[in-house]
Length: 131
Image (tube, rainbow, N blue to C red; front, side, top):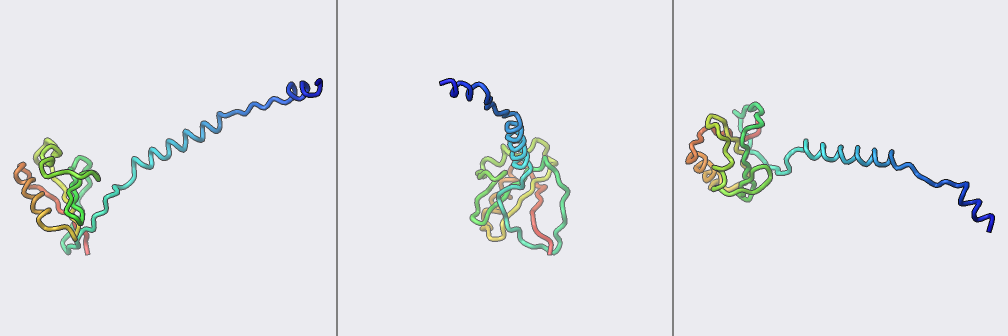
């Protein structure tokens, strides 16, 4: 009986969890930042154009995409034509960027362009790749 009590008193089995918690928080921070700066998931195969020019980046610019099936997207979320007016920034002189997949039906492109013109927007940048 004396031996069992001796073992309990001498061996202190406390483990310091502070370094483990620090590592977990660093990993959490890394994944949150990596997800924030990641590229959009929606891939659109832009058609080639010989006269394509690189447009300057503008984070306030509204970017709309049409995939190969003709579905309209804003920031990887599908939207309808009726929702475009609510997405437009308040300044009418700002450009709208439209990225259309090369396999998308032409009527989807025309529908978006028609809705943008009905909302008073004529400054539309159409995405293409340079040859």
